[in-house]
Image: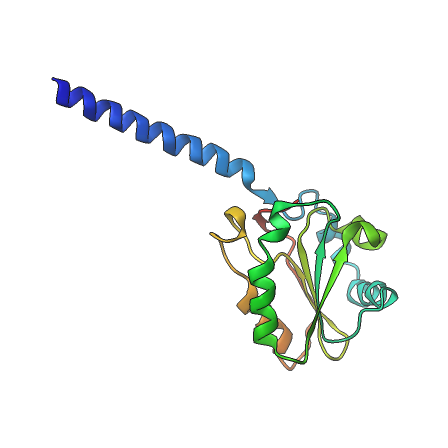
Length: 172
């Protein structure tokens, strides 16, 4: 009888622990574009060029991998460091890294409801990607988007920017 009670307690403990982890994990997932602001703005015919103009006004040059973060200390912001390193290594010396605080650029703050965000301008000053680095819990258990971003950036034909507004992960 004591053995059955021990197993029952162990099973109840495991179920309770898993339930707590799932509830906590769901609270950690945030939508990248919860109100659809970025999605709405990105449907404008001149969205790509107007965003490039905003970036030029911040003295950002062609061939830039732009990390958009926040002035406040955000844990999710620190999780992007490996993605940044991996992305720059795959794109090579033709690209350089730039950091922007969303609070310093009102035009970005108006469209980006969540950060960290990634913006990639190719060598021809064309917007290639705008969206998160990764998705999923803590942006490390989900899908790493670095390979896809490299593909979008290095394809020779330009078909317009990829705007990834439909993502859930660790965002501030």
